[in-house]
Every structure is written in structure tokens, then in C-alpha cells.
Length: 257
Image 1 (tube, helix red, strand yellow):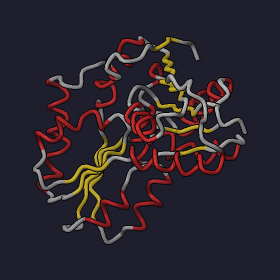
Image 2 (spheres, helix red, strand yellow):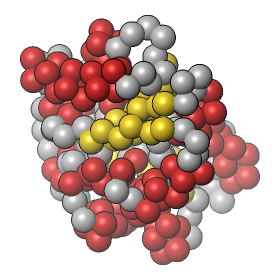
Image 3 (tube, one colour):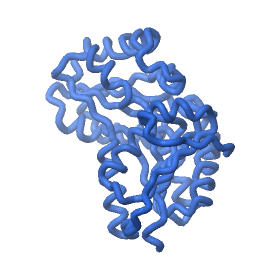
Image 4 (cartoon, one colour):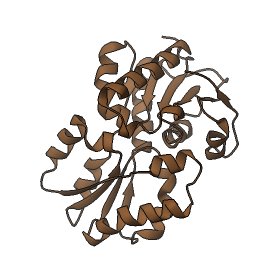
């Protein structure tokens, strides 16, 4: 395999950039192509069949860009479609799912909260994972409306603050000591979440773990040896929202896919 081929990363929208940033920080010499399917966000309210179809569409786009491995930077797409993706394509896939294991393992109260999409919480993969930790009480909360607000650039809006209070306060009252963020969009909400939850509650997302797994896979298929590693970003909606979440450091190309 050509080591200098890019890593492909896709998400239902801009949220997967939280995963991309961890990969880019850990593997700065790797070429990366990021694909934001914001036109179809959020995936969490769609059927399993539709999530699979959209995921395959994204994969086809990235394969046409000659990617050597693909990171599914979307919890909903991972928990609903990665099994089918691995069966259909002959390329390494790295998925992302809620980091329940470190939360359940380290919880002192044995009560943890998870904020995720409907598609993730209702998936077979998620239920299989939670069954392993049956001694831990897991308080599940669907983050209705959060992805839409993030995609519309309303991270610090009054509507966002109101939703977060309504989702997090019951978890606080239930005495959680870990909060698992089960959507790659949600790390962008950590500053607002921190204002709501007590300091003793730990927040866990999967970004760094995904980056490390990407590094592990590259040990097998080869690291980039080229210096031409400028990241490329594509979206099928207004590129300004994606550019803003990236701090206006990169140009984003609007593309139909």
C-alpha cells in the first residue's frame, strides 16, 4: 500500500472535526481528508438502513479520493453501519462508540450518564456494550436538538443552554460521577457543560482513543513519509460553519455528494 495516501474521515456534519483534531495532533505528518455530510445531519433520527446507505455514500466518495483507511467519526454511523462497511469494503475502518468502559471501570458511585443520539442509544452495538457493565447504572439521555444547533453555529445560544440544563440536571441529581459524550459533535459543548455540572463529574469523549487506534492501524499499513500533508475539507452545505469550527485555519470546499 502507498504510505502517502490520505486518511479519510467522515461524519454526519461538523462534529467529527473533534475526532479529526485528535488524529491531526497525534499524526501531524498524515494527509487527511474530512467529509461533512451536513445536508443529512443528524444521522441519529434516521433508520438503520438510511444510516448504512449514507455511510456507504461517504465511503465511496473517500475511496475515490484514494484514502488508505477510513475513520467513521460518527457514533451513530459506527454503531449502526460499521459492520456492514467492513463486510462490503476491503479497507481498514476505525469507528467511534461511547467510551462506557473507562467510565464504568473508574466510577466510584457506579452511576454514569451518557448523552448521545437516538440512533446510538437504540443500536444493537450499544446495547451489547452496556450489558457487559450490568453492575453500573447507566443513565441514558438522547440529546434532542443539540446537533442541529451545533450545525447552525448556535453552540452558545440560549436554546443550547436550556437544552443542556434539561438533559444534565437529572443526571446530577442521580449522583453520576462520569458523563460520557456519545456523539462526536458534543465535545464542542464541553465549556457549556462544565458550567452546569459539578467539578467532581468527569467528562469522557472518544477522540484521543480513536486517534491512538488510527496510529495502531498505521503501524500495519504504513505511515505517511511525504511532507505534503495539508488537510482537505469537504461539505455539502455552507462551508462557513465548518470553517468557523476549525477556527478559520483551513479552506472548506462545498461539494455535492
